[in-house]
Amino acid sequence: MIGTAADCLAESLNGALGDLMETDESVVLVGQDIGRLGGVFRVTKGLQERFGSDRVRDAVLAESSIVGQAIGMSLSGLKPVCEIQFEGFIYPGMNQIVTQAARIKARWNDDVALNLVIRVPVGGGIRAVEHHSESNEAYFAHSPGLHVAFPSCPTDAAAMLKYSVALGSPVIFYEPKRLYWKRRPQTRDGSEPESDLSARVVRRGSDITVVGWGAVLEEVLKAAELVASRVDVEVVDLRWIAPMDVETVLSSVTRTGRLLVVHEAVGFAGVGAELVATVAERGSGLLRSPMRRLAAPRQLYPPADYEEHYLIGVSDVIGVIEEMCG
Amino acid sequence: MLRHMLMARGVDEEAGLLQNQGAIDLWLSCRGQEAAQVGSALAIGDEAVIFPSYREHAVAIVRGIDGVSLVAQWAGRTYCGWNPRKHGFFPYTLVLAAQTLHGVGYAIGQRLQNMAETVVVYVGDGATSEGDMSEALNLAAVESAQVLFICQNNGWAISKPSHEQMLTSIADRAQGFGVRSWSISADDPDLTYLSCVEAMQYVEASRSPALIELRTTRIGGHTTSDPHTKYREPDELATAVANDPVEQYRDTLVAEDVVDEQWLSSVDADVAAARRDLLKAFAQ
Image (cartoon, rainbow over the protein chains, first blue to last red):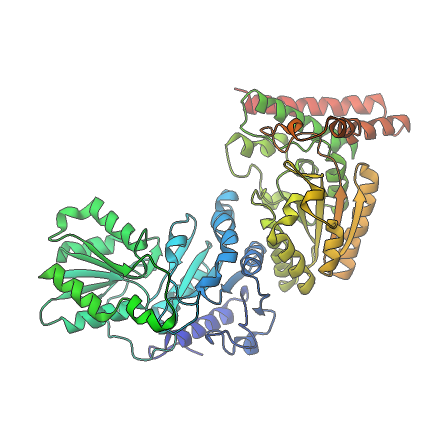
């Protein structure tokens, strides 16, 4: 399958994985139900038929085994791409990720490449049961030695996945679930990111910079469009949580003088706090109004009937933009 | 065999003394486990990649890693003082049993790339309580991974004795996962060597995993910061010291005329040189 601009996220990732496996025999996939079933979100659909069960490996039902064996496979010369079925199930593999994958390069005195991607479907808004709707990127952003990717659109996701697979350093690769099969994303300005790891401006504006990543960027772009007659909103897609491209954000804030960070994850000790703090340290003189964060409260993700109230909605974003620019 | 054991003992003693003087930060003695380590390491041969735990100093010495490289990480100079690929001896893993899954994954990875070398994983008895150990045994079994697990059971997980750590033997547990296993007394390096050769041959011939439990003795504390006399009975400790495998093996080989004084003095000179190197590198 060749990825096209019209693909949804799941199709785009499927195409990217197929391309990667086609061009590099050392790429192998490891995850629960990714082979026969094609993954619970069908991201690996058809790949086992194409590349065989040696390279598209249905894993045992144990996340520590998935990550731990992938570390060993990587040391043996392969480029494993793991799938954790839902972000809420990554914790049994957390020890292998944080104390092992993230540290192995340093433990080897940087004399080893650890090619390892851990794909993680993330976030809510799909009426899922407990442990299937959280956003837990902050845990991994906090750990030295990990890259954390958080694409918000199909084309970026494919490019970022291809970059991650041969990076030589482990990547936690988040895939927003509610974008997997979304066909009509908000339109974005076509500016390309400056480098593989850069953030990107996806809408030009002059009154306020709104930074987001992942699925919530859809709400941000929608809000920007709805307030366009009153406020000219610039939107930055952070794309990578770690390393974090603060330069692109600072350069945007230089133009707009205002910064709002929106994220789906809990706000307390979250990634937005890091971004706001860094801008405060480096660019507070640029600001016309106090910076704000719009994020989930420090409460458990609720049962599906209540998630609409818990998630950041378009009207929430509009409300804060208007307060800041009023 | 004896040469490696004497060298390991010399490096181990010197490192302990250096720690006592504050020249290095911590040392995890392998005193008492030299027969298990050298016997198994020689049985493995040169080819297999080894995923160690953190006390396999005598195995490292068999693999050609010198004392200074071995001690460097315990002196705060590095995370790993040797070249892992060159020696086929991967870095120590201090989070217990995490390396067991790496070893299994490495074996699977090698098979996928049509390389058929056996992988050896060292693990301690305490670490077998970790979930990763059970996951690794299960994964190795179900994937038929070419891995030999060598479990040194020194009877203690810091202060908790093995009988409080597990109800069945580690070897019995391995069988429950479908992994062929053996449990042997590993105070004699020759017998250890022969048993490990058998285990290694089984793994290579069957291309499936196996586990060998080496029942051995920890003469020192868990680390140099562990006052183990607090929790060990004097009689048990005295027996451990009296059964020192290095002394016993040396005496046996001398009694059987396998080695003579001349050979011993040449080894002693090498050990003394290695100890001097340690002093030079760390005692400043």
